[in-house]
Length: 169
Image 1 (spheres, one colour):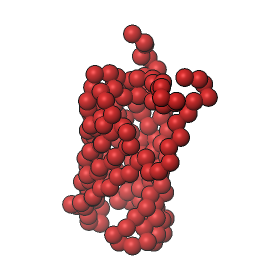
Image 2 (tube, helix red, strand yellow):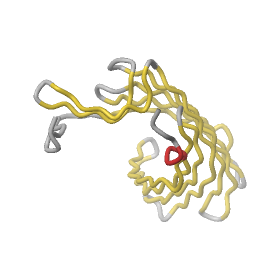
Image 3 (cartoon, one colour):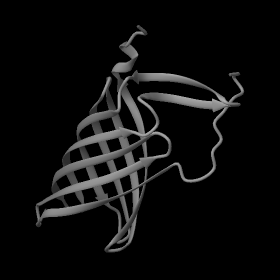
């Protein structure tokens, strides 16, 4: 491998789908349960369950969340950063001899309705991700032109990661 090797795949590398059930929705409170499936090409299939409960303040909802995820590895029994090149590969492995991964997250968030079609969302999330813990901030903007369809674009930044305290064995 050389420093110039890189992974260059065309096509859809990540896709998913999900469903949400709003089981409480009145003038003050809202609560939802959600389930998602996410496929990452040559990496994993992930199943995620989530519960959110929030208090409505005008056009903004402040909420708490609990999320659990289970991933089944689809390419071997190791995961990490992986790059192939000229029949060889280079890998920074996070964990070996593993077939599946479990993670758990909890956090707080705020969801604001800007107008009939657009929303803003922010979440502060603390999670346990198999071999490390992390504190993240996630921001999103959403567009919902119809009752049964919405598109959300989001970004996430890590504020703390216990991996910085890990050492190579």
